[in-house]
Image (cartoon, rainbow, N blue to C red; front, top):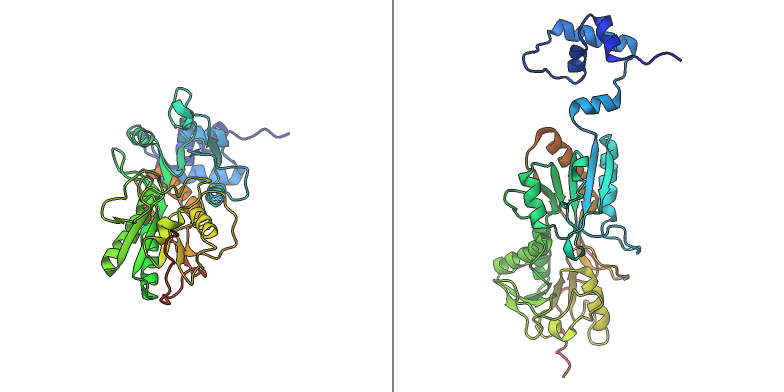
Length: 367
């Protein structure tokens, strides 16, 4: 078997040092070392003539990288259910990582007190990767701050507020999508709208609520809110629904408070979580017809397992596209630094649960 060519062989044939060959292969100059165009061309000619291929491990060592991208997940992304919210994100991440010629490393082992996942603990392995993607509904603020302080390349899949500095991210433009659906409802004659959700906490919730509130305010229509989190007050700037503040929508397995939503007198309900909309329609099926009595709009895909054949009006979260773009941004951060922040548009879904106001409106709460 023929011996594999080495950089020393190329250096000898080109009449240069091995250091010069390494610098030409990596397309860089070291300190005071300057390679003339003639020398560079001679080295490249020998490489082409011999068919030399640089050893990948040595090349990565010279670059200080191993071409591994990490994915840190703050919650399980492979649940034992067919309704997996994170699957499209992972498909996009895998596709783009393969195209970039890199490998993926999934981080799952680091846990802080209480069982919550954290990037940094005594056994943290995040530095094994050249950079890391963060995936999860909520992200630990201390983790973000340390990633920024330690200058570890990372990109969050999902918009994140500053954490001691700007956070690189690719997110979905929930605010614009929510506002567009409000405008569509108003164009169909709706003047009383209810937002069913938390409206605070995770940035994705806050963005949906902000888009709803901005559109309601701009259009001069009535916007009320029924909280999805028990025993909490509504966010500033929006009137609480009466009754129903603190009704336990959004709690997995909890029955929606139909009276809380219908009691607002709204003709269209905007659900922050699609699973809550499914549960609400099921609980209210003997009292109202959707959309004849009450229109229902969902602000994105279900994040909890739910089965339904309802063709909801709403919007599509560009999950696969976000996964792909996150990898593209991360490779850019690894190569050149920077703090990219991008929001991708959400496509509106026509559905069949938003209709023009007919004058009937929802039935009052049961006495």
